[in-house]
Image (cartoon, rainbow, N blue to C red; front, side, top):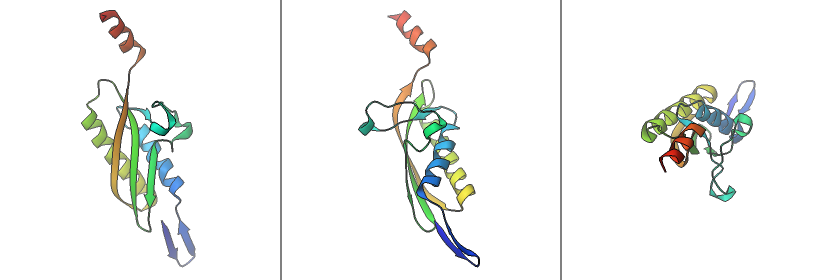
Length: 125
C-alpha cells in the first residue's frame, strides 16, 4: 500500500502485511502453527520467531490478498477454525494497515497431535 498525503508518501511493505497476518493466525484458537509448504519438506510447526513462513501476500495500492498454509490442532473442527482464522487475519490486517483484504485463502497442510493423544493412540493398538 502506498498513500500520498500532504506530508509525504506512506508505503506498507508485503513483509509487514505478512507479519501481521502470521501473528493473527497463530493467535487463532485451533491453529497449532504455520506450515512451510511442500517445497520445504514435511509441514513443520513454527514459533512466533518466523511468523511470515506459511504466509503469502499480494499487496496493491488499497487491497491485499492473503494465502495461509496452516497446521490445525487435532480434535478441532477444521471448517470452524478456518473461518475464525480468515476473520481474525482480515480484521487484523485491515485495522492495522487500512488496506481492504479481498480474500484470505487457507490451506490446511497438517494436523498436530499432543503427546497425550499420541500415547492414547499407541495404547489402543
